Length: 199
Ligand SMILES: [Mg+2]
Image 1: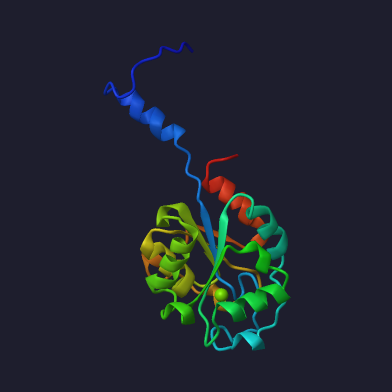
Image 2: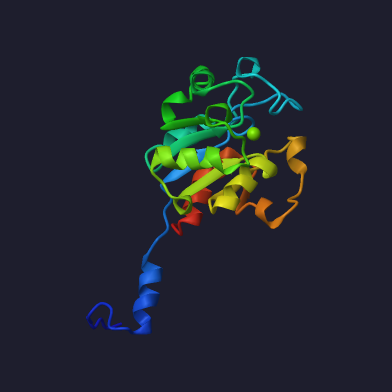
């Protein structure tokens, strides 16, 4: 195929096509839910526990995935809490060996609003310096994580781990439909590459 240079913006249709094909989407920021996304929760207690009652066991794959992703993206936790603020959530993350990976930790108590409201997501984007279109939310709940992200135009990945009964719910509206569903956090780097069009 021959290459003939031409002036940019001469109005030819091909220019637009080349531009769009050449413009690769790459998110700047990955936002993570906490309970049952990064740290395990006891069944049935989601959103009803104080942070000091949470079991600090990591969800399988959490540490290795965060270690890989931190070099490519800004990372934040966006979590609905009962009374906990950022220092308590950071403590929980530290106990689980995950704190060092996060550029920002946003709690609903600090923000004064719970997911799926916009404020926790917007605060995370503000702290990471990203637009909604430059972010991806990863969480295990359709009605908080997925709904809140999609309403703002943030791409959303549902983590539906096997054996988690609560996550068998189906989307109740188009805004609760995630862009991707993964059954293990270990699949996240691969899905992000797929979304970026990197094979
Ligand atoms: Mg959760």
